[in-house]
Image (cartoon, rainbow, N blue to C red):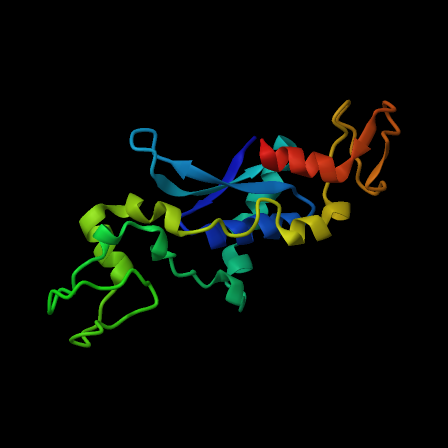
Length: 190
């Protein structure tokens, strides 16, 4: 499996995956973690089939695909409620303990502007927020499942292209049964 794109945002990585799916290329988003500390370093887009690498890179090199007016690319707020209460930061101005809520941008006591996630990162390190974000979309995006008939999937037995064939059937080349949904799910689970 080839990594063809990486980003610190799970949403942008997910958009890249979905852009590839809209062009018939099966891809998935995986977390890139530090080997030393096991913290999330970013999100990579991997291909199911190496034969799509050149086309995928061409499609993703033109980054206009993610500049579209798409509200789904707005970075979500981290869910700070999963963090220990002891990690609640202090307001830099008045030293009041701030709530673990990323939507709050002013201190409830002194009304100074605060960035609660940034204060947590400053005190606990960037890995503290690793579990506060969900991946861009479910493991298999709805868009990928809707486009499954346009994906260039290969027969698990002989690697014959199943493009244009029904979702389930027998491979016309080797006679092995195939199920396109299963091929996608097995790739996403690997």
